[in-house]
Structure formats: structure tokens, C-alpha cells
Image 1 (cartoon, helix red, strand yellow):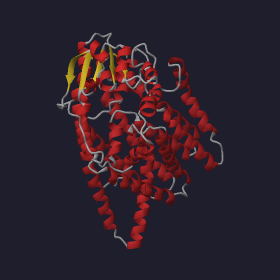
Image 2: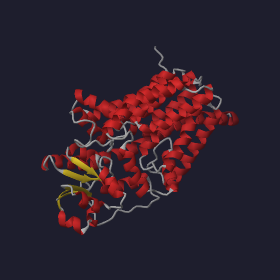
Image 3: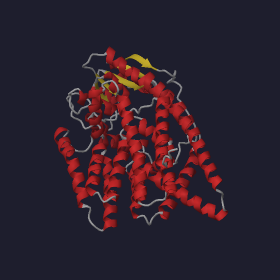
Image 4: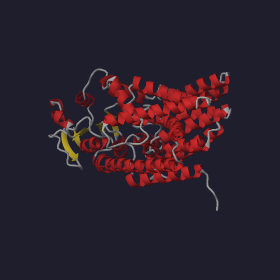
Length: 504
């Protein structure tokens, strides 16, 4: 009978769990549809734009948009399926690369199994691999550049680092960490690595500068204004938000204070793993990157999007696996623990992970059904069917509605609307933005409409409401800030599923 390797079983379970999650939830991120619209317009010959004839660099992932545009040329009606399959393939390749990388560094097989076992079982990776975003491609390019650099294939490493920058510009921080660590370890400046990466990324820099007027995505400026300059959270809240994400599993029915303790324990175990394997100098890339990302995300206020945590989380979970192995080895020697206890502990961990994963899957399924499919998608389809093709729509949730409406959009955050950011810098409120920009239609949360200005009400009238969960905007939803994520999401979903369309 043929004996399969641990890597084979890891890939089998990774594939099965991710596919099962997708088939159960059908979940696709809101922001994925922003990229999909860029891809759709590019595929249809309208150029790299969100709104026709408006050259705004409104996506942070040009590589993924181009790949999806090519996919649409072949499969024009399967964009969600295509994005999910690219994510799945990237996630599986990343696991293989980690396994091979640790093998090259002479990490014991048991230690490798623990390191990638966390990557396989964490439901947080299932969501981001299958949710239609570029996150899985980011991690795959990170691991490919890392793997090639460890193998002294600097040109190949530079190629993948350049692709990483195409996928998402914040990959530059990973690139800088690789340059720094390679320089310290080899005592030679990694010239070839840097030159190849720059040459690979240079065509996009030139194109973006000429086409958009800047090589920097406009989404960065827009989000900094909306979520940092205007809606900045206190530093302690940002730290807490980041910390809560750093548990190996989602813990939806745990209170926040308990999650904080578990996250702190996760970081301690990861630190133990880092110290235990510090003789493997190339592994220092992982904790150095984790530390840099923790500081950067908090300082720059980028804790408003959990997907920004994923590269950090991926690296942290590898050293966490090392830490678990180290701690278990110490306890087994100190208390003479039996091997059967190790297997029992692993089995218990798997059962617990599946239990919490099912809870999170249900949350994702409900969000997909009520918020995305029954509200935002239907609203977009209504706009596509009931408004003139030349209509302009003001809205906040740009993804599903913008993609299915196929109308010119002005988004409240300013991701594809520079004029919005300019006005927000002058402290314009939502209704001041609408009345100044004068769109044909405005999409509002049901309770936001209650706070409409007299000028807005004199100019616009409500034409339709999408409210699949029966939300009453006159009765504000309240929950204890110390309640679990399960409670908070189930309550807040009612509001986020309720929208009204107002017509001028």
C-alpha cells in the first residue's frame, strides 16, 4: 500500500476544508466586486477604469484585476468562481512553499507538520483564500520570493517580489525585510534581487504614472482620509483590534477580554518559537516582518480592514507552530507526558477548531444571504433595470451595488471619486457631499436617511427600500461592547442589510 507524505494529507485537508466552507457559505467579499468591475471594464475594452473615461487608480491590486480580466475573456459569467479558484490555488501553493522552505532549512518533519497544520486548520485562511480577494496571491508571492532567496536564487526571488508589488503595493514592506535579512545573513548587498524586482515592477510604475497621473493607488489616500484622518480610532483601540485577530482560530462566542488573553498567549508562544529556532537565521524573516507589521498597522491606522492582517497572521502562525512544538517538548520532558496525550491534544484541537469554524461559517453564510445577495446585489440589479444608463449614483458600499448596477458611481469613501476626498478634507458631511455633487440617485442606510438635511429632502425623494431583515430605523440597535462577535454581528447585520434608494 502506498504511503502518502504529511504534505499530501495537509493539502488534501486544506483543499477539502476550503471548498466545503465556500460551498456552505457562498461568501464573497464586498470589496472583491470593486476589483471585478475594473476587470470587467478592462475585459470589455473600456480601459483600466471603474467608471468609464475616469482614470482613477481605484484598486490596490492591478495584477489581480488583469488576471481576472483575462479570465473573463474565457469565462464571462464565472467571475466569482474564477476568483475563488485563484485564491484556492494560491493558498495550496503557499502551503507547499512553506513545507519546502522548512525542509531546506532542515526543520524536523514533526515541527513542519505543526507549522503548516495551523495554516491548514485556521478558518481565517479559508475565508481569505476563498473570499474573492487578492490576499491569497499576496501570501503566495511572499512565500515564493522568500523560498527562492533562501535557495540563493536571487533573480527568481526578485521576479516574485516584483509580482508581489504588482499584486499589492504594501508588499514593499515584505520586500524591504527580505533585503535587510539577506544583507545581514550573506553579508552581501542583494543587488540582483533588488534590480530584478524593480525591473519587474517598473512597467506598472510607468503605466500608472502616465495613465492615472500617479503610481500610488488613490484608494490609499481615500482610506487614510476616511478611516484615519477623520474616523481615526484611539491607538489603544487599534492595538486591541489587531490583538484580537491574532488567535489561531476564530472565537466568535468568546467575550473580548478572554480573546485578548488568548491572543497574548499566542504571541508569547510565537516568541518562544522564535527564540528556539533563532539559530536558523533565515527564519528571522518571519518574526521581524511580524513586528514591523504590528507597528505599521497600528501607527498608520490600518486596523479597519482585517484582511490587512493576513500576511502578518500567516507568518505569525508559522512561528506559533514552532512555539507549540517547543512548549510541548518542554512539558513532555518535565512531566514525562505520553505520546498518546499528544495525539489526543491534536484531535481535541481539531474538534475545537471545527466547532468554532462552523459558527463563523454560519455568520458568513447569513451575511452573504441577507446583506449581499438579498440587499446589495438586488439593489444593484434594480438600478441596472430601472435607471437610465447615464445615471450617476452616490453610495457608500461600492462593491456589489456598483458591479451589478453598471452605472457611474460616486462613492462616499472616495475610492474611485477624488472629488469626494477633496470635499471631505473640507469637512463636508454625507448630505453636504450629496447636495454639492448632485447625483441622480443616492443610496443610504435606512437609519442615515432619518438624519437627512432639509436641503437633501427638498431635492430628493425615496423610491424603494431593500430591507430583508425587517430593520426598524426608528429603534436603534444596541449591544454591550463586551459582547461576543457572534452577538455583535447578528445584531449589526440588520442595519447593514437595510438600504434606501433616493431619486433627484
